[in-house]
Image (cartoon, one colour):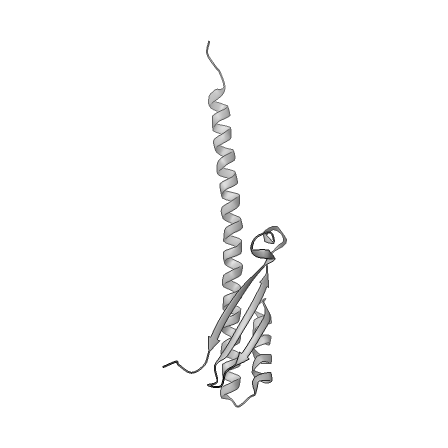
Length: 119
């Protein structure tokens, strides 16, 4: 007895597996892109804060400058510290889109340091 149509069922199953894998890859790519944006916002914020420190601003003004730049890049500043040597450490957080919020607790973080070279 010949089984007709079994090739169609196998092909449909293969297409389904490929579709699931593609959806998972797109989800992962979205999380990675958000993490890159959070790190870029932290980096740019730290640079803005370090520039303010070099111009003579205190920690409050430097961290405010860092926060403005981080927010302009779509991330919220979660932390800011100006070290004794003038280095500025910035931590940012970016919320994931609703479809991706189940990954990474719904947010991704970025951290950066800017300031004098370390010896």
